Image (tube, rainbow over all chains, first blue to last red; front, side):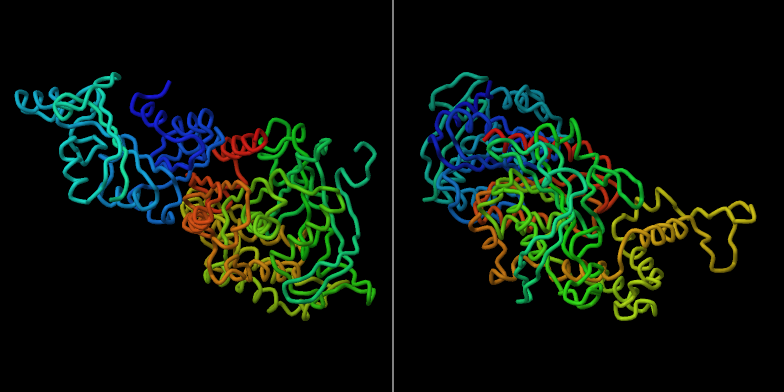
Length: 195
Length: 378
């Protein structure tokens, strides 16, 4: 059973396409795409134990870091480059996105929305950095070093001239509509291409 | 296959060849010493070639005839291991230039009736691989399910994929590199100079006389340091002193005996090596490794070496290996990505330096096993 944001990505990837999953973990999405959509999948993952698990599933995964290693991939060599729940952990999300759009014809990006109302309340009334089900880490041990909201991301894309080809929003595991997404959605998934 | 003399332990065969060498010369006839484990299946789809390292041999999983020790990779090869004779037909061949039965400088030159010595041609990693291909032709094996090797064995595995892209379905390259660095060449040159500085070397013409054992032992000692790590040496020996032959416990001799345990260990490594290895083979094989640069025939672009390959690749490096560090494996992975090849890569953590690939490494076994099985199910 795929995580909801991965299920959205899996549904919208073309059968038989070539994908690079950046931050692929143990290769769950890659394996699903390979098995159900005949996708030629490659992965990049920072954790060696995850890489070992993915390779032992028969997937092609390279141990590496999105911040430093995307530069090694040639232009336009994938149909899709996927970055799920990883953008907010990179040192330079802007460079990472530039490389994704260089390497892939299109890019899927999913991230937790830091402007969702529960987080706003925790911040406004608690006066504390929010610890929620979606963002369970404390300020000092969180891997999420670049928190981003849906509106932040949209304006970032606009500034860079990136075209949004699809957008999906989630509350818990349920899809929700575009209206008030920045306030209501816990997660966002964007399909992008170079402008 | 039962009763087929071509398969089994301790095989020897002389084939006409010739091997077309990178130097432009041709070498013939070619002797091969090799072993096979397991049975070639009906569609000949389960052949796995294991390539050995500089001082390795064909005795991957059977007793070494000189040292009496178990095979050098029984952790990887055997029943229930990633390379399993129940599933694979495993072939290991003593490389050309070596001294365990395949053609090398100590072999008899049929044109003179005496050992080749320095008349043996200077060979390359590519030449070793072209020779192996001749033996596989003889065995009736067109395609390798996998070619697997660590260190110099990894160089051969990479060369197999580059030279015979249609014959290799998967390649496993462990603790290896696509080129010898200046530092790698420098260490080898120390070893070669030690051998050649031994008066018994006699320009390579020492067969039937005393071998240049002191020179070869020093070469082995220097090289052995490069196979270990500083942390590994510290853990194993630290600055601990040897007990003296007169029974004195761990005190300095104020002389030049092996006071430190690490000295004694290295001396032992050097001395035991000369019993099983030929000094001229050491010269020829280190030379072949130093000449190794897979980019050379491809205008300096490594990706071009893999342009025609459809093989899957799995690379593994070890974080404490400073001989062929992770950066070298990454360079290969980068090239494979650029060539669009299916590549996997992991850096594993181990304190034991370059030698880690020969030691107990459960993660390495898990990765190789999964990688090979996935290839067999394609």
